[in-house]
Length: 505
Image (cartoon, rainbow, N blue to C red):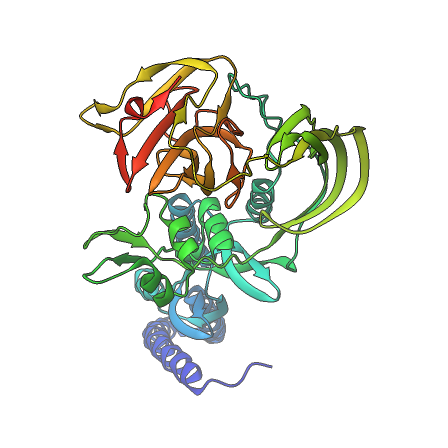
């Protein structure tokens, strides 16, 4: 039941009394006129009838006047606080709908009121209202919100998008990022590498986290676009931190400062080369922590090489440390089936399901000498150098070449690719040298050395003693070579000498 309102009752009483007073004044005037008429005509019956008519007229007019001045008004409340009085609910509702429509056009969202607007209807005698004043008050109180969808990860809200369909598209795009790309056939000219593309079958692709969505009212400025939500879920942030390089900075120190590894700094800044950075350079230093983990389970089938084995057989017709290949090895092939689990593109588990040999490897057979020279092999040479290959011509002599010293001679066009020791001695180096490629150095005593460069294979090891003419390697084009060539040097006390002055063919 509605509570008694003293103010409303007092207002009604005052207005009723004011109207009734005016009515009494008019009634008295009419009564006086009637009395005068009665006395003039001296008719008793007329007097009685007139008085009765006046009473009825007065009562009828009073009721009509009261009803004619009753107003149906609406008190407007925002969040249970009255902000004005209007004469029609449509005044407020039309204004509200216009505001929502404008906001919807601006933000592209379904908009809803952020306040609770209610009305209280009341009939009141000669009631007062002000539509404009009520709308002005409503303007300052009215809040508009968007109808959006909150993305919740493991029970924690992380952001808003405009609807369920948008949220689903975002999650599907993130998952699709980690689907394998079908590689097109690639042909590399003159390539002998065997690297067939694996067959990948995706068994499942899921998000590890518990993800849910719920409809909410939200400020339009908080609603993210699809791309913004994708960035947020993949990186954990929408804004990338940047660092300006200062004097004395190093990449490792910058990485440590922002909780990154050096590799992560390079990954975030692909243009970085080595440790070289300049004062004023701008580096990305955002520590990427994805909010979602895409787990992909795959079945991978690929062909793999099976390396051949090298089998050594003793041969007493060859000197010790001499070898001879009698059968080249051939690699085999096998088909391997794996179960692979990846998280955000990184393999975290790989297990073999099945292996099938397609082609067995063929062993390489090498004869290894056991014969000992009657004069015994010494680590000191004879001092007479022999041509280190079978035939061939000098394609680049000792001396100046291309504006700098050429410290040996280049020999190519040989009959075969075998490289032989120019004299007896001890192998002091077998390995790679910058510019020279695969290199063998033989010391012949008295601080005399011969260098054999740009090789493709070694037949000796460091510490071996070799005899003049022994096979020690195979010509190639490793290092800074212009083709298959042997770069041959003679060095005395570490100084390169012109080999032509020391060697005979």
